[in-house]
Length: 85
Image 1 (tube, one colour):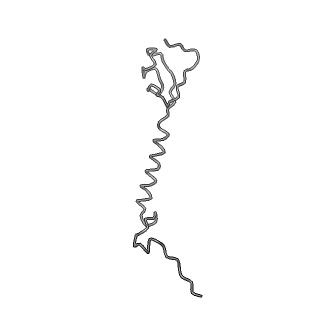
Image 2: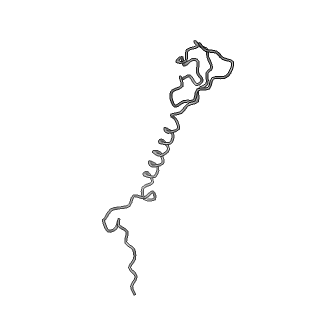
């Protein structure tokens, strides 16, 4: 009985396989893109703490640490004892 070695589809169709070992720049590009996507996904939510009252106005960036007004996806923390009107 004769054994036939397996033949990959890439060899049959004449296509070259893109592998990380053959294309190290491709591997670096994929890692960069995945890292960027993960950074953007986690960059959406911020934690803002009320540090005012610079003016007592919720929309005044001077009342928040870091200096930004919390948005819909952010967490706003207001320490006890402060009153803003």
